Image (cartoon, rainbow, N blue to C red; front, side, top):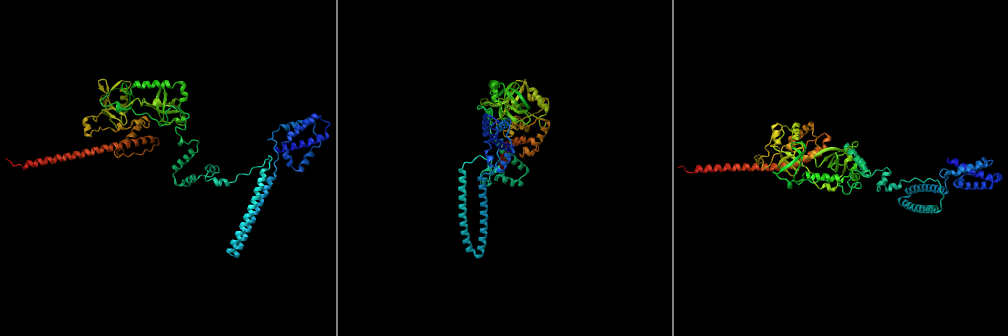
Length: 582
């Protein structure tokens, strides 16, 4: 297309000349003036190409036009050429004088370098024949002369290039020379971006590649994933709450914030009577309840619920809705479930193809799945109160099996469901915020009902005699300690019969509760449970070792007291034998 347009332009120019000389009487003066204007507008884009063409080509092109075009056809041709864009009619690119001169200078430099190499070789041969001293002097003189000549030539070349730069250059279609690798070689070690563009690897990556053979397949895969994530705009290991602070309201709580624990040491003590509503139960040893009257009671919970409903009105929901990248484990949020508002904590992140998020309701002790569209940022004022429910454990009973049977748990739920009950606090665990209560139902207790139904055994660990025998310590059953409330509230413990049996084989092993050794769980889906058990075991180990020390000291003291009593009795008998008989 480019060559055809240039040929048509030259034909038009030749035809215009013939048209002016031969056909003046055919067209009017207005038409020729119009043609002249069109000729100037069209030929302006092809002057450079016509000047660079050869004379033979011009003669051939002019010879082809033997008779002038008719006026109408000539005007249509010029009108078509005038509509052509300058980018369409591309001139034929010919080498400029500067390009030819630069090629000649490059050729001269190459010849000069070859002559210098030949002279150096001849000088070395002469120096070996005449002697080392004479050869050194001659090579130094020749090197100085060659250096001066090279400097003169380089000065001349620099002057020529400066003159060429000062001369105005006409637009041409010359190709720019490709960048050399010298710049990259100088800056490749210091500029990591240049190294990545040129395909070179930074030193750290090269060391990782060299040492990859010594690493295991798992470590190599982890290193590769870390490298892929680091090249993202915001790597996953660098993502914090501050990165997404733009989308989070300024008055909303961030990731890592948690509610304070209820101050049961200031509000409850042993022997207190409470009115309670049991709202959730895993077993008689692990259940959650609301206090009807007193600290953290239902009046405060109802007030909090009404404040949540007023705050999250339809106008504010759009700006406070939780984006997907805030659906992180442990994030506190407001949950809209069954037309009511609750405070919750995310305990499981949604999968890529799943929109359901598992949350724990902080004030109701329930774990449920909700749609991620029903989760909202929590305002900081709603995090002022601790969870408005208590953790409870039934007293005076123990399971008849390694764990509580399903029938016993169902019976316990039936007895306490949706009932206002009275309870007496018999013990308090201040560390885990657990109240050990004896619950009354009419004229009897829930414990007695389970024992009479042969669904539980009677425990005497709360008696004063049992505590005195254990140095003031109340013995706790292992199933009373495990699973912990934290395990249940984070949903790392699954309450199925099959899993209960597997859990029994872990916690009742002597190496676990006596030697404090954590068994390895091959199931990768139980890693969260294994981590929770390891944390509990370290805490239990410190507590158990301290009590073992107290018991050992008590036993030694008791032995010493027995020895003293025996020695004293022996001394008394000896004294009695020494007295003279009357």
